[in-house]
Length: 387
Image (cartoon, rainbow, N blue to C red; front, top):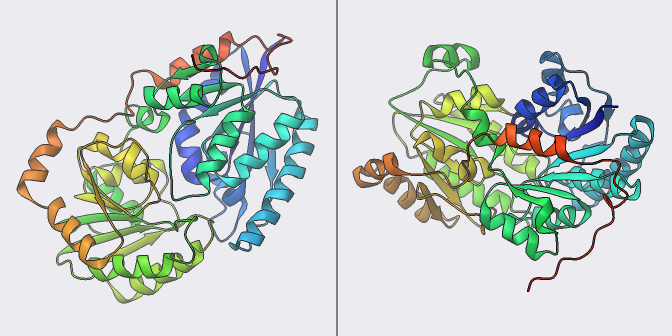
């Protein structure tokens, strides 16, 4: 019998990272793909992006609505509870052999919890990473402890997963799927992307993605105001905003983006560009500003700079193309000056991406194919002690 591989995706960005892996699983004759869409995929506010999944000729086996009408801590906790109940019911119906989970979002935690209780083995992607400013940090490590196989994006992260007590024989450094995707996508030309998104590139171009720092108390509005103040000083610059996720206080940022773009003709905003549009834009911009993981993990492969603001991504391994700055207007101004400096621009050409490894997707498929789902010990885990 084929292995039933259930992949869970909760955001458009998440699906973008997983898309090539999902296609590979779907085309492998020894594997049966099961696909669950949840979270922002099913939200009208965030664009009902499950339709994009279906546009790839993929069948969504279950759509799990978790009611993202509130971005408060209470609202998110209630969404997590509803998600765990719904995932438990979905897993009981689908009866997958293995669950594949990416990253560290709260709905993914609920999926992991339900799978653990249901005694279904979990494969976790991008474990061992650090984001010291986010609730994602403890969520990610918790998912690691509930998981049975681990595919990390760097060797250091592999060591950290082992440090958490996971058996090294089940931990594999495969590199980043997002970076691997870049090598296999057909990206759009400048004219194509301008037509697709409905704006024109300028002399200078910046892409901005800023999310709340969820372990800080109500700092999003002030920090993002400082960023907008700095951006408003730029001349002959097209500003391309991608909006915040459904995190605590994310709607505050999105309202500020809408207000800014309504007053500034040189700006454009989207809830999510989608992987092809996003990577296509990166070919023609000067740098990325904000605090998204993409600025750390994928953007360095395009030999452009990233200005990483504040503590949201603190702790991640970073390429030399990343400029760190604190979330003050003065420090952001200084970082932008450095981004455009001749010396920094010259050094970008020799930047290497620490998350890049050859054949990431193929290696994951190969490892999945070797997992013995009939082993009695597959879900029994012994804590691995470092010597």
